[in-house]
Length: 361
Image (cartoon, rainbow, N blue to C red):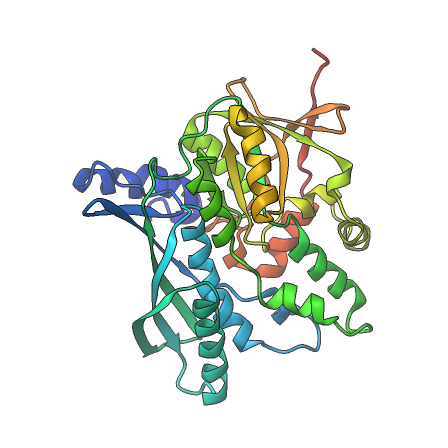
């Protein structure tokens, strides 16, 4: 047998197989971005598709499977891709597999969550397909309208652009790890249930920023915040310097790191689950960006800048500088989410992000 996808990994497969074949038939193909763009008269459609993951609340001891949260998350996974484009919502359509012995009440709860997310974020029902399969799983295709130029993808960042996380950082993972540590001894608060069951994609925030031409590139954090930054850097042929501050770490994150044995609280900060967006913001537009965030009430953190230096670096509180170990989700590898959620979380939490200490310049 020849090489397998396990030998390649997700990103090499996209880079060396999917993207070249796509370019053969469409030179402008955007395979590898969060979403693609299709011309429609003078406007553009942003399009994307994703598979709904299991919500983390399903893994909390004693909770059981939350089908409504699963349906919500199936929609959010695709909506989050469209959010990176600053797209106005149009519609979602789906292909749902379900086993024949699935209780009808469970399908009803799943679809309630799915349609609730559609309505909450302004997407029309574009129909879909319900078929028999081995497990309940939803593949969701989404379309949004884009009227601005340039169109935002992972490429387009420039050296000197600030790296800005739009939305919370590590909130979902900290909530999950603290709930696991308590092992059901303390009931989940209503706030924790909401965080774990109903994450929010950044449609509103990104639409406001893109409309003001304040974003050069973006990628959602479905594979982790560090993975999203890496997506932009690789596509833009840049490196980056992360400049972190201890004030970014709230008490829940610090407690979760202590309880879980994480390599550092920053592993939680850079994890997935929040459906936030990593962006490249032009440095020259920074004051305008800050004003827009204040006006529209956008939660954000500036965590560094993209560079044309020889390697990517990480500094905390203006102290020692380290090389970066890239800790992120990647399909077809033994550390990927779809290879086992709990083992993947251990990898994300226990693998050091801080690499070799760099010499003082």
